[in-house]
Image (tube, rainbow, N blue to C red; front, side):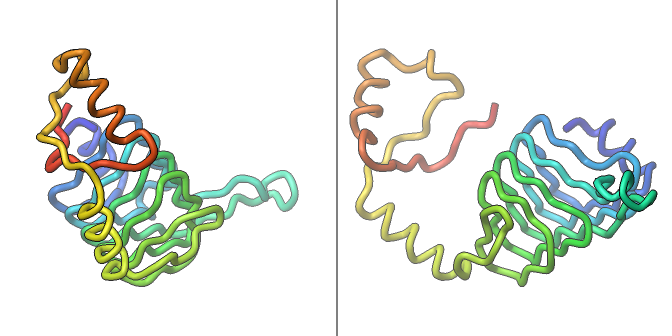
Length: 174
């Protein structure tokens, strides 16, 4: 998301903190932008949607439901997640990919699913990931493009993660 896009959304009433990262192809409700508050240090992965309205009741009732969306500081929202009206995501929470999020979630947890629910605390998640990393292959920083790797290197990495996961220190920014 470009600075001009963020300025346009702010002009429409979006409240957004510093150090905001939106990977690509995100959707933020343009009609009720003023009901959305995104904190500092928030990361939205690709294809995340944030909706402050739900028009499914329009044909039934003649009204569209609206509600605030608050994403507190330090939240990470995974690929393809949908954040619905009347939602609060507590600070430093991780939202798993593909989640449908509605409701109020505490800080420092991992949530996921459809509908999203609390899966574990952030501390429990950290412990699990440290266990994973100690039992998994670790690779040097990967290049920006797979084309920068030799065929042999691609095969080595692929074979290493054949039935498990691996880790890289930092993913190169595209």
